[in-house]
Image (spheres, rainbow, N blue to C red):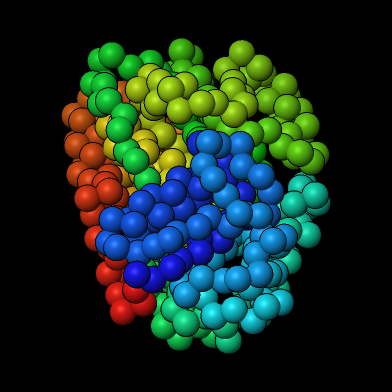
Length: 342
Protein backbone atom coordinates (compact mmCIF):
# COMPACT_ATOMS: atom_id res chain seq x y z
CA UNK A 1 0.00 0.00 0.00
CA UNK A 2 1.08 3.58 -0.66
CA UNK A 3 1.53 5.74 2.42
CA UNK A 4 0.07 9.24 2.08
CA UNK A 5 0.47 12.50 3.98
CA UNK A 6 -2.27 15.12 3.55
CA UNK A 7 -0.89 18.54 4.43
CA UNK A 8 -3.40 21.26 5.29
CA UNK A 9 -2.70 24.48 7.24
CA UNK A 10 -5.43 23.74 9.78
CA UNK A 11 -8.33 21.38 10.22
CA UNK A 12 -11.46 23.25 11.31
CA UNK A 13 -15.14 22.47 11.48
CA UNK A 14 -17.42 24.11 8.90
CA UNK A 15 -14.42 24.73 6.63
CA UNK A 16 -14.43 23.79 2.94
CA UNK A 17 -10.74 22.89 2.71
CA UNK A 18 -10.84 20.90 5.93
CA UNK A 19 -13.92 18.96 4.84
CA UNK A 20 -12.32 18.31 1.45
CA UNK A 21 -9.19 16.99 3.19
CA UNK A 22 -11.17 14.57 5.35
CA UNK A 23 -13.15 13.30 2.37
CA UNK A 24 -9.90 12.90 0.42
CA UNK A 25 -8.50 10.82 3.27
CA UNK A 26 -11.58 8.60 3.22
CA UNK A 27 -11.34 8.24 -0.56
CA UNK A 28 -7.69 7.22 -0.41
CA UNK A 29 -8.34 4.62 2.30
CA UNK A 30 -11.31 3.23 0.37
CA UNK A 31 -9.01 2.69 -2.61
CA UNK A 32 -6.42 0.85 -0.54
CA UNK A 33 -3.90 3.59 0.29
CA UNK A 34 -2.43 3.74 3.73
CA UNK A 35 -1.49 4.68 6.22
CA UNK A 36 -2.90 8.17 5.60
CA UNK A 37 -1.84 10.96 7.94
CA UNK A 38 -3.17 14.50 8.20
CA UNK A 39 -0.41 17.02 8.88
CA UNK A 40 -1.32 20.51 10.13
CA UNK A 41 0.52 23.55 11.48
CA UNK A 42 -1.75 24.00 14.52
CA UNK A 43 -3.68 21.56 16.73
CA UNK A 44 -7.13 20.76 15.38
CA UNK A 45 -10.39 21.74 17.04
CA UNK A 46 -12.00 18.57 15.69
CA UNK A 47 -11.90 15.04 17.01
CA UNK A 48 -9.55 14.00 14.20
CA UNK A 49 -6.02 12.82 14.88
CA UNK A 50 -3.39 15.05 13.27
CA UNK A 51 0.41 15.23 13.11
CA UNK A 52 1.88 18.68 13.68
CA UNK A 53 4.22 19.84 10.94
CA UNK A 54 6.91 20.78 13.48
CA UNK A 55 7.50 17.05 13.94
CA UNK A 56 7.08 16.08 10.29
CA UNK A 57 10.48 14.62 9.43
CA UNK A 58 9.47 11.39 7.67
CA UNK A 59 7.34 12.25 4.62
CA UNK A 60 5.12 9.51 3.25
CA UNK A 61 5.51 8.02 -0.22
CA UNK A 62 2.90 10.45 -1.52
CA UNK A 63 2.45 13.98 -0.15
CA UNK A 64 -0.66 16.00 -1.09
CA UNK A 65 -0.55 19.67 -0.13
CA UNK A 66 -3.70 21.80 0.21
CA UNK A 67 -2.71 25.33 -0.76
CA UNK A 68 -4.78 28.49 -0.58
CA UNK A 69 -2.73 30.82 1.65
CA UNK A 70 0.81 31.05 2.97
CA UNK A 71 1.44 28.28 5.49
CA UNK A 72 4.07 26.45 7.48
CA UNK A 73 3.00 23.15 5.91
CA UNK A 74 3.87 24.52 2.46
CA UNK A 75 7.10 25.91 3.92
CA UNK A 76 8.02 22.45 5.23
CA UNK A 77 7.58 20.96 1.75
CA UNK A 78 9.75 23.71 0.25
CA UNK A 79 12.42 23.56 2.96
CA UNK A 80 12.72 19.76 2.86
CA UNK A 81 12.46 19.68 -0.97
CA UNK A 82 9.67 17.10 -0.82
CA UNK A 83 7.99 16.15 -4.12
CA UNK A 84 4.26 16.70 -3.77
CA UNK A 85 0.86 16.80 -5.39
CA UNK A 86 -0.47 20.34 -5.15
CA UNK A 87 -4.23 20.62 -4.52
CA UNK A 88 -4.86 24.28 -5.27
CA UNK A 89 -7.80 26.32 -3.99
CA UNK A 90 -6.62 29.76 -5.18
CA UNK A 91 -5.02 32.66 -3.35
CA UNK A 92 -6.82 35.99 -3.44
CA UNK A 93 -4.52 38.61 -5.03
CA UNK A 94 -3.45 41.07 -2.36
CA UNK A 95 -4.66 44.10 -4.32
CA UNK A 96 -8.27 43.02 -3.78
CA UNK A 97 -7.88 43.48 -0.04
CA UNK A 98 -5.96 46.73 0.02
CA UNK A 99 -6.40 49.01 1.89
CA UNK A 100 -9.24 47.46 3.89
CA UNK A 101 -7.74 44.27 5.29
CA UNK A 102 -3.99 44.83 5.78
CA UNK A 103 -3.81 42.07 8.37
CA UNK A 104 -4.55 39.47 5.68
CA UNK A 105 -1.97 40.68 3.18
CA UNK A 106 1.18 38.97 4.56
CA UNK A 107 -0.43 35.52 4.38
CA UNK A 108 -1.61 36.10 0.83
CA UNK A 109 1.75 37.38 -0.38
CA UNK A 110 3.54 34.54 1.39
CA UNK A 111 1.23 32.05 -0.28
CA UNK A 112 1.93 33.55 -3.73
CA UNK A 113 5.68 33.36 -3.09
CA UNK A 114 5.35 29.74 -1.98
CA UNK A 115 3.34 28.92 -5.09
CA UNK A 116 6.30 29.94 -7.28
CA UNK A 117 8.69 27.87 -5.15
CA UNK A 118 6.42 24.82 -5.38
CA UNK A 119 6.59 24.64 -9.18
CA UNK A 120 9.76 22.47 -9.36
CA UNK A 121 8.59 20.26 -6.46
CA UNK A 122 5.11 19.52 -7.83
CA UNK A 123 4.70 16.21 -9.64
CA UNK A 124 1.06 16.97 -10.38
CA UNK A 125 -1.27 19.86 -9.63
CA UNK A 126 -5.01 19.50 -9.05
CA UNK A 127 -7.12 22.64 -9.28
CA UNK A 128 -10.72 22.78 -8.10
CA UNK A 129 -11.85 24.87 -11.09
CA UNK A 130 -10.82 25.61 -14.63
CA UNK A 131 -10.13 29.18 -13.51
CA UNK A 132 -7.62 27.95 -10.93
CA UNK A 133 -6.08 25.54 -13.44
CA UNK A 134 -5.41 28.38 -15.88
CA UNK A 135 -3.70 30.31 -13.10
CA UNK A 136 -1.48 27.34 -12.27
CA UNK A 137 -0.46 26.86 -15.91
CA UNK A 138 0.35 30.56 -16.18
CA UNK A 139 2.55 30.21 -13.07
CA UNK A 140 4.54 27.38 -14.67
CA UNK A 141 2.93 24.14 -13.51
CA UNK A 142 2.85 21.50 -16.26
CA UNK A 143 0.71 18.52 -15.26
CA UNK A 144 -2.51 20.22 -14.13
CA UNK A 145 -5.80 18.37 -13.63
CA UNK A 146 -9.20 19.79 -12.63
CA UNK A 147 -11.33 18.22 -9.92
CA UNK A 148 -13.90 20.14 -7.83
CA UNK A 149 -13.88 20.49 -4.07
CA UNK A 150 -15.39 17.45 -2.37
CA UNK A 151 -18.26 18.56 -0.16
CA UNK A 152 -21.40 17.07 1.37
CA UNK A 153 -24.54 18.66 -0.03
CA UNK A 154 -27.55 17.73 2.08
CA UNK A 155 -29.86 20.76 2.40
CA UNK A 156 -33.59 20.17 2.10
CA UNK A 157 -35.30 21.92 -0.80
CA UNK A 158 -38.04 24.41 0.16
CA UNK A 159 -40.52 25.77 -2.42
CA UNK A 160 -40.82 29.50 -3.16
CA UNK A 161 -44.12 29.92 -1.31
CA UNK A 162 -42.58 28.84 1.98
CA UNK A 163 -39.63 31.23 1.80
CA UNK A 164 -39.07 34.80 3.00
CA UNK A 165 -38.06 37.85 0.90
CA UNK A 166 -34.48 37.44 2.04
CA UNK A 167 -31.51 38.13 -0.23
CA UNK A 168 -28.66 35.99 1.08
CA UNK A 169 -24.89 36.01 0.72
CA UNK A 170 -22.54 33.59 2.49
CA UNK A 171 -18.85 34.37 2.87
CA UNK A 172 -16.47 35.99 5.31
CA UNK A 173 -16.54 39.76 5.35
CA UNK A 174 -13.48 40.66 3.28
CA UNK A 175 -13.24 43.29 0.59
CA UNK A 176 -12.75 41.05 -2.46
CA UNK A 177 -16.30 39.79 -1.86
CA UNK A 178 -17.61 43.34 -2.28
CA UNK A 179 -20.22 43.48 0.45
CA UNK A 180 -20.54 47.19 -0.26
CA UNK A 181 -22.00 46.35 -3.67
CA UNK A 182 -24.53 44.06 -2.02
CA UNK A 183 -25.55 46.83 0.37
CA UNK A 184 -25.79 49.49 -2.34
CA UNK A 185 -27.91 47.19 -4.50
CA UNK A 186 -30.13 46.34 -1.56
CA UNK A 187 -30.97 50.01 -1.11
CA UNK A 188 -32.62 49.94 -4.54
CA UNK A 189 -34.25 46.55 -3.97
CA UNK A 190 -35.77 47.90 -0.78
CA UNK A 191 -37.30 50.84 -2.66
CA UNK A 192 -39.50 48.48 -4.68
CA UNK A 193 -39.72 45.59 -2.20
CA UNK A 194 -39.93 47.16 1.28
CA UNK A 195 -40.25 43.76 3.00
CA UNK A 196 -36.99 42.47 1.53
CA UNK A 197 -33.94 42.00 3.75
CA UNK A 198 -30.25 41.36 3.09
CA UNK A 199 -28.66 38.68 5.27
CA UNK A 200 -24.87 38.38 5.24
CA UNK A 201 -23.58 35.15 6.76
CA UNK A 202 -19.89 34.82 7.57
CA UNK A 203 -17.01 35.74 9.85
CA UNK A 204 -16.67 39.50 10.49
CA UNK A 205 -13.96 41.76 9.08
CA UNK A 206 -10.75 42.02 11.09
CA UNK A 207 -9.80 45.35 9.46
CA UNK A 208 -11.48 48.66 8.71
CA UNK A 209 -13.71 47.13 6.05
CA UNK A 210 -16.42 46.14 8.53
CA UNK A 211 -16.59 49.64 9.99
CA UNK A 212 -16.86 51.13 6.51
CA UNK A 213 -19.76 48.78 5.74
CA UNK A 214 -21.55 49.76 8.94
CA UNK A 215 -21.14 53.42 8.03
CA UNK A 216 -22.53 52.79 4.53
CA UNK A 217 -25.54 50.91 5.91
CA UNK A 218 -26.33 53.75 8.32
CA UNK A 219 -25.90 56.37 5.60
CA UNK A 220 -28.35 54.53 3.33
CA UNK A 221 -30.87 54.05 6.14
CA UNK A 222 -30.66 50.27 5.98
CA UNK A 223 -29.90 49.43 9.62
CA UNK A 224 -33.17 47.48 9.90
CA UNK A 225 -32.75 45.87 6.46
CA UNK A 226 -29.21 44.44 6.53
CA UNK A 227 -28.23 41.73 9.02
CA UNK A 228 -24.73 40.38 9.69
CA UNK A 229 -25.06 36.99 11.36
CA UNK A 230 -21.39 36.35 12.02
CA UNK A 231 -20.18 32.75 11.79
CA UNK A 232 -22.90 30.10 12.02
CA UNK A 233 -22.95 26.33 12.42
CA UNK A 234 -24.10 23.92 9.73
CA UNK A 235 -27.70 23.80 10.97
CA UNK A 236 -28.04 27.59 11.01
CA UNK A 237 -26.48 27.89 7.58
CA UNK A 238 -28.86 25.31 6.14
CA UNK A 239 -31.77 27.20 7.71
CA UNK A 240 -30.76 30.41 5.91
CA UNK A 241 -30.52 28.59 2.60
CA UNK A 242 -34.05 27.31 3.20
CA UNK A 243 -35.48 30.68 4.26
CA UNK A 244 -33.98 32.93 1.58
CA UNK A 245 -35.48 33.65 -1.83
CA UNK A 246 -32.36 34.83 -3.69
CA UNK A 247 -28.65 34.10 -3.34
CA UNK A 248 -26.66 37.13 -4.52
CA UNK A 249 -22.89 37.02 -5.08
CA UNK A 250 -21.15 40.16 -6.34
CA UNK A 251 -17.65 39.02 -5.38
CA UNK A 252 -14.83 39.97 -7.71
CA UNK A 253 -12.55 37.07 -6.86
CA UNK A 254 -13.56 33.48 -6.12
CA UNK A 255 -11.53 30.42 -7.04
CA UNK A 256 -14.61 28.19 -6.88
CA UNK A 257 -17.29 29.51 -4.44
CA UNK A 258 -18.75 26.64 -2.44
CA UNK A 259 -21.71 28.76 -1.17
CA UNK A 260 -22.99 29.12 -4.75
CA UNK A 261 -23.17 25.32 -4.99
CA UNK A 262 -24.77 25.03 -1.55
CA UNK A 263 -27.43 27.56 -2.55
CA UNK A 264 -28.19 25.72 -5.79
CA UNK A 265 -28.37 22.42 -3.94
CA UNK A 266 -30.99 23.96 -1.64
CA UNK A 267 -33.09 25.05 -4.61
CA UNK A 268 -32.19 28.70 -4.00
CA UNK A 269 -31.83 30.67 -7.27
CA UNK A 270 -28.43 32.30 -7.72
CA UNK A 271 -27.42 35.67 -9.14
CA UNK A 272 -23.67 36.09 -9.60
CA UNK A 273 -21.27 38.63 -11.04
CA UNK A 274 -19.22 37.65 -14.08
CA UNK A 275 -15.81 37.50 -12.40
CA UNK A 276 -13.18 34.83 -11.67
CA UNK A 277 -14.65 31.31 -11.21
CA UNK A 278 -18.25 32.29 -10.38
CA UNK A 279 -19.64 32.01 -13.96
CA UNK A 280 -17.95 28.61 -14.34
CA UNK A 281 -19.46 27.35 -11.09
CA UNK A 282 -22.96 28.58 -12.00
CA UNK A 283 -22.58 27.25 -15.56
CA UNK A 284 -25.83 28.66 -16.92
CA UNK A 285 -27.93 27.51 -13.96
CA UNK A 286 -28.46 31.01 -12.60
CA UNK A 287 -28.31 34.66 -13.60
CA UNK A 288 -24.81 35.92 -14.35
CA UNK A 289 -24.47 39.70 -14.50
CA UNK A 290 -21.83 41.51 -16.51
CA UNK A 291 -22.97 44.79 -14.96
CA UNK A 292 -23.30 45.14 -11.20
CA UNK A 293 -24.46 48.72 -10.96
CA UNK A 294 -27.08 48.80 -8.18
CA UNK A 295 -29.95 49.43 -10.61
CA UNK A 296 -29.00 46.41 -12.72
CA UNK A 297 -28.61 44.15 -9.70
CA UNK A 298 -31.87 45.35 -8.16
CA UNK A 299 -33.69 44.65 -11.40
CA UNK A 300 -32.43 41.04 -11.45
CA UNK A 301 -33.31 40.51 -7.78
CA UNK A 302 -36.75 42.02 -8.33
CA UNK A 303 -37.43 39.68 -11.23
CA UNK A 304 -36.79 36.66 -9.03
CA UNK A 305 -38.89 38.03 -6.17
CA UNK A 306 -41.82 38.84 -8.50
CA UNK A 307 -41.78 36.01 -11.05
CA UNK A 308 -42.59 32.56 -9.58
CA UNK A 309 -42.10 30.92 -12.98
CA UNK A 310 -38.56 32.26 -13.38
CA UNK A 311 -37.82 31.44 -9.73
CA UNK A 312 -38.90 27.81 -10.21
CA UNK A 313 -37.00 27.46 -13.48
CA UNK A 314 -33.75 28.64 -11.92
CA UNK A 315 -34.32 26.63 -8.74
CA UNK A 316 -34.64 23.48 -10.84
CA UNK A 317 -31.63 24.35 -13.00
CA UNK A 318 -29.58 25.06 -9.90
CA UNK A 319 -30.41 21.73 -8.29
CA UNK A 320 -29.40 19.96 -11.48
CA UNK A 321 -26.11 21.88 -11.61
CA UNK A 322 -25.42 21.16 -7.93
CA UNK A 323 -25.71 17.48 -8.79
CA UNK A 324 -22.44 17.84 -10.69
CA UNK A 325 -20.76 18.46 -7.32
CA UNK A 326 -22.35 15.60 -5.40
CA UNK A 327 -19.85 13.19 -3.85
CA UNK A 328 -20.95 10.55 -6.33
CA UNK A 329 -19.38 12.80 -9.00
CA UNK A 330 -16.51 14.53 -7.20
CA UNK A 331 -14.99 11.42 -5.61
CA UNK A 332 -14.48 9.63 -8.96
CA UNK A 333 -13.20 12.90 -10.41
CA UNK A 334 -10.59 13.26 -7.67
CA UNK A 335 -9.55 9.61 -7.95
CA UNK A 336 -9.10 10.08 -11.70
CA UNK A 337 -6.98 13.19 -11.05
CA UNK A 338 -4.69 11.03 -8.85
CA UNK A 339 -4.42 8.32 -11.50
CA UNK A 340 -1.02 6.65 -11.62
CA UNK A 341 0.20 8.12 -8.35
CA UNK A 342 -1.06 5.43 -5.95
